[in-house]
Image 1 (cartoon, rainbow, N blue to C red):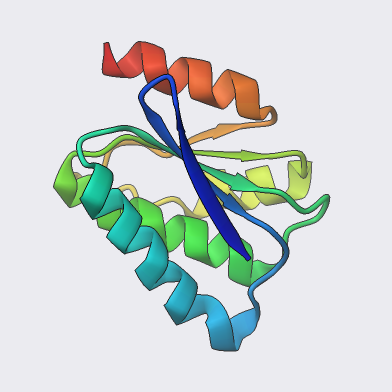
Image 2 (cartoon, one colour; image 1 turned 120 degrees about the vertical axis):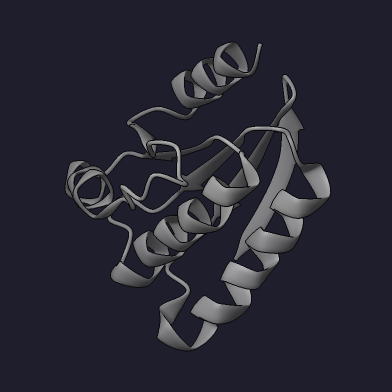
Length: 118
């Protein structure tokens, strides 16, 4: 359900499939632990389903809310235009959070996160 790696100094977390409502807290905690362990590295969350479900999108939004106060840049990459629209509309605009950056391609998200961290 979750895999991760470091690419060009960017923590890339891939969510494979939709976690469902019951697994959402466990997945959010796993992402939280990874972000804290690799802080201050920027984070790219990859929603790897063609049409990610509400739970996967919700986990990405929750990770964004977590990372803002930590000063960690968060980006999300998904092929789904519908998911990108939801992420952009629902992203936390709290002054403690940086803007959530949403990309259609993983390579673009990683390159942008790397450039922003420099």
